[in-house]
Image (tube, rainbow, N blue to C red; front, side, top):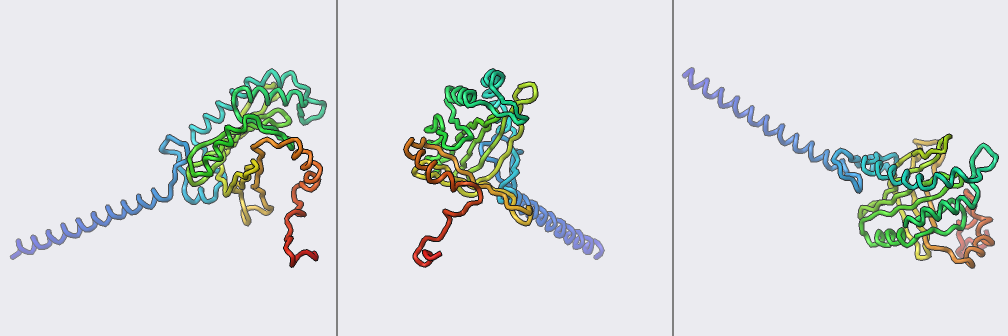
Length: 270
């Protein structure tokens, strides 16, 4: 009789142990599944470690930069800068504390980058983008939901070179931005590399690339951060440039909303 009771107790203990193991296994699988759903690989990334959570992806700014993209941005920017070093060294930089290169040197830099086949522009109103077809082709494909990337180099007035790589993964577009500048000895240095999701974008028929970056919002910041950007991709004709300078430029300072008005009949009196 005692042996029979021991046998029953042993069987019951074994059943409890098996049920416990089964429950733990299910919990591990469930947790693992939830973890996988919360992670998303960084576009154009070949390493398993470089992932961003859905929460960070929704936030959209200050995203982690993969080692591969960081290395590429640094390598390509430094390669560009090495070819411009002699131009910067011999440029007229003015007498002010803030360096501003002469237009002739800026044009030389643009020409040098253009010769390497890159899309390049300058931070100046009404300037045309060189080799624009390369980037325009990327945007046209992105409009058709085709994955890809496109790079724009921008020459700044003080001689630094911005690199903007736009990456489209078939659903979202991201901006990998970096900037290369010059130290006190005239040697190239990388000042920053950032990775940001683009909240919304469009490429107009007339050649404007309009997009809005994800930026900190209230209550995280006390002042509004403007993440909207506008880049002219297709060249503007001389006539359009002349009309725009005459009719639009005077109204186009930041904060002016004179053109953002209701023009329907009910509001004509105002």
